[in-house]
Each structure stands twice: as C-alpha cells, then as structure tokens.
Image (cartoon, rainbow, N blue to C red; front, side):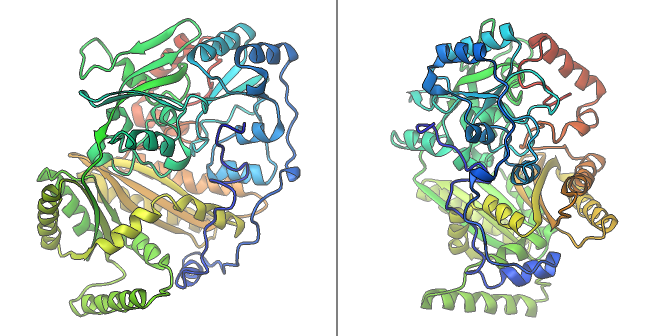
Length: 558
C-alpha cells in the first residue's frame, strides 16, 4: 500500500540502506580473527522479487468480498509481495527462510483497516468464517510472533494497522497522549515533538516498529531507565474483540482485581487487536547528553551502574559493553578523514598507552555510556555524581564525543546482520534479565554455553554482551553471537546454539526474555520460566478468550 510504510521484503529496513565496512579499517581484521571470515564487499544492493517462489493465496472469494466490503477494495490485497512482507518478522531464521524461498505458511490476504469499527468487523468475520487473524505493526519481531503455523489450513488474514497512525489527543495537564496503535516510532515522535512532548521509548527497532507492537510484545526502549518499559508507559488502551471492545481508562493507579492492562500488554495478538493506547508522555528535555566512560573490568563497570541506581541518580540510561563488545565497538570506528579526526585517533591510542602503563589489560576494558537529560543544572549535577562513582571504580571519563557517536549509530546494528548473512554468517541476539547478585553468573554461563555449542559443531564462534537496562534489583544483559553457518542445514545448528544460550539463562537465574517477547522462538522455556502451573493459567486465559483459536494461534504457549 502506497500510504503505509513497509520494510523491504528480503531484509531489514528500507531499500538502499546498508552496512559498509570498507570505511572501517579495523573491522575486517576483527571479524577474521573472531570467526575466521574474510569479508568481501557487498555484492547485492537488492533482491528482485521475481526470484521469490511464493505459495498461492488460499483466500476464498467470499472472504475477500467480506473484507473488501469492510475496508474497501483498495485496502485488501492478495499481491504476492505484500503477502511475503507480512509472512514473518525479521529474525535471522525468518530472513534465511525468505532468502532461500523456504516459505511455509504465507498469509492469504492482507487487510488495512482504517478505523476501530473496521477492526471489529474483521474480527467478527474471522470468527464467523473460522479465519486466522494475525495483527501486524512494523514487522520487526525477532521472536517469530508473526509466522502462522506451517500446518495451518484455514485462511490467514494479516491485519496491518498502518493506517491507524495518528496522535489523537494530548492531555497536557496529566501528560497523557492518546495514540492510534499503528503509528511507527519516528512518525509518532514527530507528532509529539511538534507539540513539545516525547514518549521517550526508543527500542533498537524504533524506525520500523509501532506503538501497538511495542505493547503487544512488552517492549523496552534504550531510555527505559528514565521513561520506563512499555508496561510502565501504557496507562490505558482499547482492545478490540469480536464480541465487544475492552476499554481500560488511563487512571494513575487502580485496585480492581488482577490487572487487565498487564494481561493485554505482551499478549501478542492472542486476546484481540489493540487499536488505541493512552500513554505517559514527557516534556522534551532542555538538555540531552551522552557521556562515555572506560572501565578496567566488567565487574567494576557493573558495580558502578548498580551504585548509580542505589544512589538514585536520575539517569536516562546507563549502558555497559563487556570486553568483547567493547573490542567490537572500537573495530567499527570509521577511518579518520579530517585533521581533527586524525588527532582524535592519535589521542585515543595515547590514552590506551597510558592505561597500559597504569596496569590496565586493554583486552579486558569495558566501554560504558550514560545519558543525562534535564535542565542544564540537573545535567551538570548528575554528571558530577556519576563521575565520582565511576572514578571510584577505576573509570576514565572519555567525554561527550564518543557519546554523540553512540546516539548517531544506535539504530544501525540490524543492517550489520543483513550484511553478515550475505557472508554466510549468522549474527543474532538473545537477552535476559537477572538480579544484580546473579548478573555475573548469568553472563559467564551464557559465554560458556555458547562456546560449548560452537565446539560441538566444530565452529569458531563469537559472543559478546552489554548491560542495557538497569533496575533497583537487577539489570538486562543483551548478548550477540555470530558464526559461519552451514549452507546445507543452517536451521538445526542455529537452534542448537540459540537454545544453549537460552537454556543457560534459565539455569543461571535469568529470564528467557527481557523485551523481545515469546512468539514461537522462546516457547520451549516457558514452563521453566513461569512454572507449569503458570503456563496452565495462560492456556486457560487464551482458550476462554479465543475458543476457536482464531487470534494469532500458537504464540506464547502452544
């Protein structure tokens, strides 16, 4: 649809946007040492859709007629390319399947409702005609929450919410904004910023994900330390069901039984379709500054962040890369082309030399970023308080230069994954959360599990991590792993490595997912994470809410 933005059918983001390593002189040697790959320049700028072998639509003509009557013929499509855009998310497995023409069950029709009433009528039709309905936001899911079961024989309808993309109202006294669920992150922020407000929610997928998708998958953003996870941000919502609409008013707090709001957040379309949300918004800050610090060790860096939290210093985020990720980050620096840049590069090398003279192991050092927002006075005071704690843990303050670079590059990482796939290399992620007392245990366990899996497959693999979100009781650890895949059978070895890392989270005291949701990817560990009785409760909820199994069946719990 011309009026709804989509990612390219074969990869992440928009056509014409790529990762380029040729202006990063340290990157190719780093990759060769880490996983044994000799990088070659990008060879594909696009993939012609004519190469896709797409199963035909199974949509019956009477179903299409119903949908066209509801949303208009121009907003109902059985075009192959649109069906492929909506058939899956953007996990590594899904991208591999798409590029290899390993399509399983592609939606039969895509419909773009333009109002809540249309969504209601679509769900009524789904129940009456026994259709499968899968809500679609930006298509950025990496937990396989958008893929239908490969044995699904019913007609599958992908309900794209992209036409419902407006900020409807801002209650400036309460700091509450009512927003349609299909709005993409950048479009929402543009509308809010124009009136002096921000949601402050910036996940890695920000450019290609929606407010409704964030709520449906229980998302966290890079700035959640200040603004909260999406579960903290959503105050009210409207959930359309075929029988009626659940309306949750945006009250500051309530004691009216188990939280329906919490029940809907993270439900991944299994209870109905979220059409509208009322969210907490904030005035745009006067100052926004990211400062970089370098710590001698991972443990010292984690201790510093925990102490920021204990001291209750109001921070927008505090992030720490472990030694492996720090080395990766340094390897992605662009070549200096200006006199100023060359001087900065020489200054960095001089700093590393000073650190080594002080006894630092520069292979163990860890890069940290802290974001400060508020008035000029607020930011100055918080920077001083953080610097005192960081220096007590041995850190060197690197200043705002690296921090500004982080702000510019923060949404670029997924493009690297597509580039690596062209090099027959998997680059993927797993994330967890654990109490501070367990964090180093969880970190070590994931490293050990990944290396054992690589050894079983006789591969040279890589793993790295950062601490991305902190809380009073603990933090999120976000892992990236990479290896060269077997072109004959990439799926089995991927499952072995990813499963080893996920199991290590559970075994060492972490959760199976902090913010990517469950989908199908994380189902095998649900009983271990929330207990068998917890899974039975979830089954009961979904069976009562959707007895016909029409709403995104098979997600979260089978």
